[in-house]
Length: 214
Image (cartoon, rainbow, N blue to C red; front, side, top):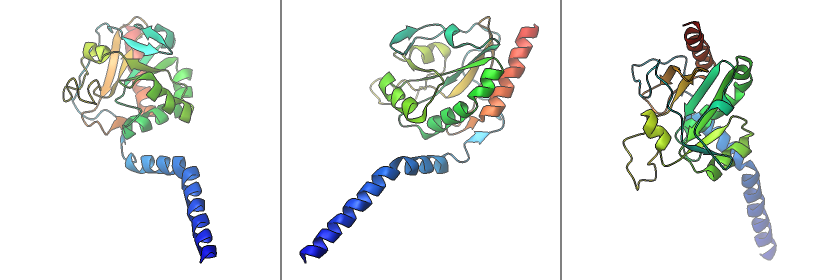
């Protein structure tokens, strides 16, 4: 009896150890299944919050690596910048998958001379956990008191002060020219969809070329 109890205990511990070591692959697999159909080849609706194309980008109020950031110049490419407003890298599966997709295309953005920078409402320590786990090299900013999202006109109005989700934005991308002009933007009404990274890069190149030619 004692021998069988020891064998059963050993088997339970072995299974527990296996699940522990497989937890990240299992999480990644679940994330991929949940977000399998989230990417679209283009902005296919008329939903368009945020600063108008042709207007001056108003800046941000955010934290990055222990510093307060108000300008995006340090993250800009020679031809412009894409600011990605994302909800959360802690609990939003679509936001996590989007950043992984963007990271996979970062070299293409760099080659095009277009900087990428992401901003969420998460505190920096929660962002850093995701960044470290997935070797993210795209800068990730933490909005301060929802000031950036309010200023940009993309603060989600469904969650008021006191709600755990207060401060999240409507997710999307804002393309900014080197002179600070908003060259274009990509916003989809459904929070569970995003424009795929390759198509977003092509859009950014086209609208930045138009602004430069003016």
